[in-house]
Image (cartoon, rainbow over all chains, first blue to last red; front, side, top):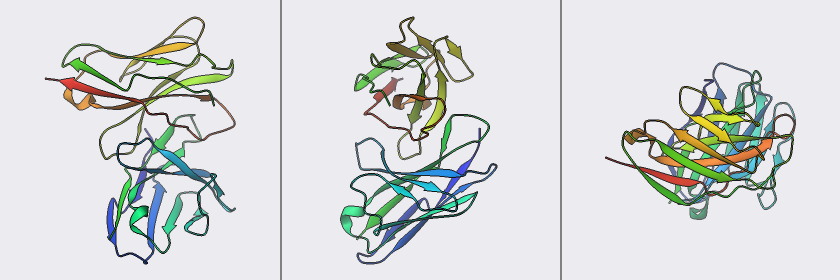
Length: 115
Length: 111
């Protein structure tokens, strides 16, 4: 299947700093990518839809000024967690749909720990 | 997207068939049934999807009832690597692309 890659896979940062997570579609172009967040023992919760060349669409309750999303090219979307706090510690996952099919492909996830 | 109901957990002996049920009684005519799984600390992995006919691929089989109100994912010969949380999701084939994840079924394969 198609490959979606996230980087880094694990990051620890200090409270108050910002962290950028990259999501790349390696072998296809994705006009739309999705960002999810998953807390321990919970399901994935959609945070936002990232659209190439336009503003992201955020789900209700997700602060757009805190979770900055940039989708500057058809193969790269970035999520920046600004002024991170310990409660932002979570597993962040991106996904993209291959244009040739309807199934979504997911990155391997990024575990963020804010200390 | 229609809601789904899955048992929270199941066990299956290694080498046996694992049958994971999913209820989606409010599914619409244009909605497909998708199955994904998530192995611990990894991103979800696509398994299979279908509309009304039974489907099979190299990973699993999907059996959808005639009234489409429920389905069963079958892993024919479960291995320890199949231990994961399995998510059943219904969504339209075209249009709204986001996936709404429920709580899924935690499948544990017993040696």
